[in-house]
Structures are given as structure tokens and as C-alpha cells.
Image 1 (cartoon, rainbow, N blue to C red):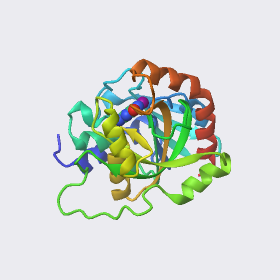
Image 2: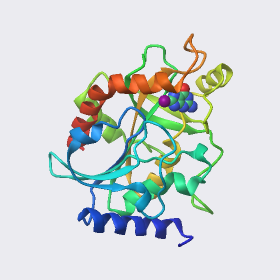
Image 3: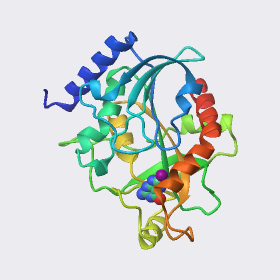
Length: 266
Ligand code: 8IG
């Protein structure tokens, strides 16, 4: 197997093209916690592949995450590559594995990368189940998907054009700065106060590293979070993965419809 992450992504893209019968995809999505149902509403699934069969991918580690990669024909005729399997930084497989899906999407032709996630919210107005646009991020992982002297500009990383598209679907959508912690533990209340002090509105364990890789690959990035829980210390109650799954399930139909409408306007 190649040791070059971009060559591996190209091999994965070649596998996808061959096994979906779609030579090039227009757009790609990573569906995080709570967003899994969106694929059905985006359009017609024309092929479903098992991530573990595709070069460089492995089975997901988290309950509620789906290990399939789908090719979807959107209602407006775009080809969407839907990645249900996200590799998280906390899995310890390295940052190359974390961004392999994004690099594969770029190699498969995608010009727009849609990154969704479930996360903790710092704004008490954002009750569990609230979708929030990502306007920017703070990468607290002390890591980068880029290796060597790869200096990439991250101004307007989360495309203001695509945030406008989203607000044309739902003008009430708020936006916020996403801070990526390594996890897998949730933050302490002190860490959440720190996140707030440095300008974060959302706390999560994905997305920032993926967004950097997507920008490096030349894609336009759209990020949207589902606040599944108030961040530790903002909420009077302790956090549980059960609560996260529950909020995701309850919000699922509404946010899936929202995302499908956004995709059709991109
Ligand atoms: I879902 O409160 C989900 N993911 N770091 N903090 C962090 N990640 C999360 C949280 C949270 N909720």
C-alpha cells in the first residue's frame, strides 16, 4: 500500500468511481451525529459501498455513525458522495486517517465539502436539536492534516457564500465559531469557560481538521453543527452519549430536510 496520502485518496476515488458507476462527483458530505437520515432526503441513492472495502477506510468506532459511502443523485441532478463514516482524531489512527474521506472526496471530483457534526453549544439559547452554521474554527488539537511546509490560507474557510445559501433556506439559522478538542472525553466546565473566553460558540471533536484538509484540496467548505447538548458547566446536568443520540434522533427529520434544501441550492 502506498505511503502517500494523496495517492491513497486517488485509489479510493478510483474504487468509488468504478463501483458506483459515477466517474465524478460534484459535492461531498460527511454526515456526523444526528445527520444520518439526511442522505435519504438529498436524493436517490444510486450506490452504497461499505467503507471498509474502500482503500484507506476502516469501520467506524462510534455507535450512531454509519460505515457506508453512498452515491446520491440529488433532485436537481448533482452527484453527491455521502460519507457516513468519519474517522475521529481520538481513535488514534493518525490525522491522515482523519482526513482521508475529505481527500477522497476531492479526488472523486467534489468541489464543495459539506461537513456536519453533533457538538456541544455554549450559547444557552441553543437548546439541544438546534442547527448552527459554522462561521470559523479554533483548532485545539495541536495538530494539522498538512505535513511539511504547506502554508495554507484559512481566511473565509467556511464559505460565506454557502452560509448565505443556507440562510436563504432558513433565515433564522445562527452561526458560531467551532472549537475542536481532541476528545473523546467531553470538556470540563473550566475548559468550556476557556473555550468561551477565546471566542468559541461550539465545542466538538471533528470538522476543524477536515475543513483544513478540504481547503488545502481546493474545495469550498460548508460546515453545520447540530447542538445536541449544552457544553459542560453551561448545562446543569452531566453529559451522556445517550442524550446526544436522543437529541440527534429528535432533530433528525427537521435538520435532514434543512440540509437537503441547502444541498439543492448549492
Ligand atoms: I455530540 O459537548 C458532542 N460532541 N468536545 N463537547 C465536545 N464534543 C461533543 C460534545 C461536547 N457534544
